[in-house]
Length: 240
Image (cartoon, rainbow, N blue to C red; front, side):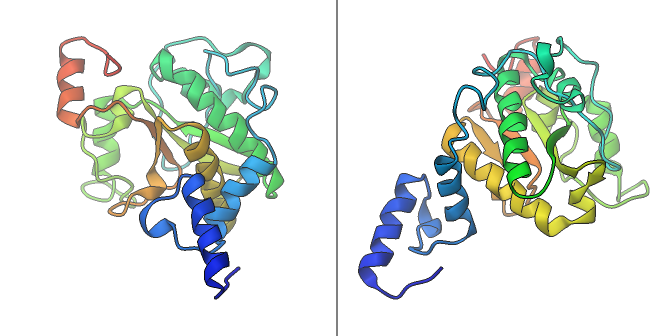
C-alpha cells in the first residue's frame, strides 16, 4: 500500500523504526516486510504457549532436502512431548547446547506462521556439518556434479561451528522451496520478520547481498571466522 501524503508516510517511517527497520528499509510504505512484522505482533507469536513453554533445551527434528548434507551425529537428546517435529529435533541436536532453544523457537513459530500462510511446517533440514561434509558441499558444482549451493569452504561456514541451521517450508510431504518457491519465499520472509523482532542474536541469510540464503539462520557470536577456527582448534567453544 502506497500513499503520497507526507504525514502518513512519516507515520509509517516512525512505525518501521519501532519495528526494527533501518536504512533503506525505512521507506514510509507498507510493503510485505512491514506487514509481516505487524502481523507477527498482532497475532502474538510470542506467548508462552506459542514458544513451547519458553523453549526446551532439547532439539527439534530434521530432514535432508535433495541438496542437503547429512548432519553430524546428534550431540543431545530430543525434546520430550513432541515440542518440534522429529526431523528438526535431530538437526537441532547437532548444534551447541546453549543455542538449541533458540532454534526450537524458530521451528515452532515458523510452523505457526507457515500454517497461517497455507503451508504445514517450517522444518530445520540442516544443522552442524563436519569439515569433510562442508568440503563435499563446496565441491558440488565445481569439481563434482550438481548446482553450486555454497561459497563457503570448510572452516568458513557457521554450520561448521554448531551455531547455524537451514530451514525448509513444507505442505505435507511437499518441499515448497522446490515446488512453490514463491510461497516458500514469502513464508521465509514472514518468519524472518518475527525472528528479527524476537530473536536479536539470530542473523538471517536472506539479508545477505552476495549470496542471498533465505532458508539460513545463524547465531551471532561476535567472532570472526578466523577466531572461531582458532577456538575450535584449541578445544574451546565459539560461545566463550
